[in-house]
Image (tube, rainbow, N blue to C red; front, top):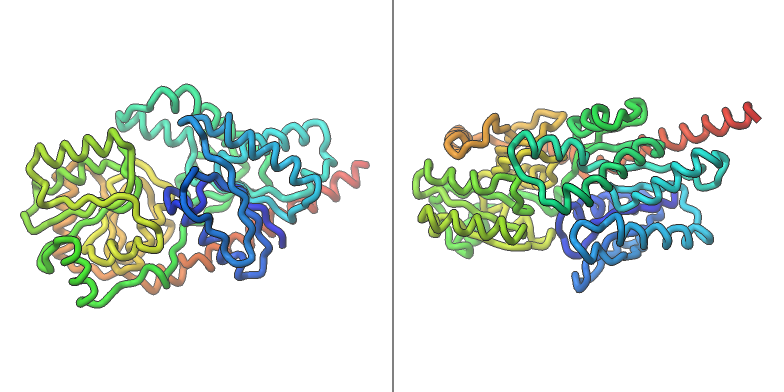
Length: 407
């Protein structure tokens, strides 16, 4: 099958969403699919990854913050129209808001020209968040929304969500809570909605022996007797990294915190100031952007991964930590499956986070890596998508029969 994937994040850099569609694409290519990727592309961002059997076309990412729908997505739309004059995919799989104008184009065709060849190509839309759900959670937690997001980027992204819900032949959500948000805010058709949580590369993310773990700790300036907490990923306000830092005040000095990942400049500056003001400089180790293939090194050195977030889809780093044998303490989402080693935070106050960290580490909880690998491998995720694709194609076939009967 010839699949066109439309996604905003694609490596390099290995940031944000990019490992998710990349790993899915690799698994689908290994299944024999012919895949073309239209992807957002930061300038001077390194070598664009093109797995075997995959062609990637990059588009310059938003030149001004918050203008995705008015810049990059417009360029994508007109390129897509030209590309379609000589190309016809068997299925389109779009992730998020990058394809906003393709959704509107299909909505337009659906209203005036239902027999269009464009509408005969199944469209699957992948939701990694819902804009309205994100806004509601930020407001309820007292977090501010910057003016560009509030008045430009998010209203357009919300329209994209609504249009996608109307024109897609199947919808994929990375979490049950996101599916419920889409039902609440966008009145999506439940019969065409599917939940497929994030996956993990078990060959890349695996535990290491004590000697290798000790060496990594020494390289990071940590003692083998330290209790090492890690948070890995984009450092933004909604993830409450500040509260995680403050939790150290309620923990013995042997508890150290690894913060690995890029983030908002102002927020990172606030975190650094918080560390200095609370004399935690010797207990917090900061690291910036780390390419996905090197991500396991830091995770393998930790004793526990903590994510006190306001909201998430299904954080891939949670699955990666579990795959490395590192227990997880997190909030902002729930997996559909119970996994030994994954525990949830009912509160994100620094005192409570500290209390739960001690409880988890003192209980010596073991991670059920077998279940993680069996149920959450990217190959498994790709197989789940096959069912979604079959549903989308079957739905279009039924519509064709109905149109022919009407004719």
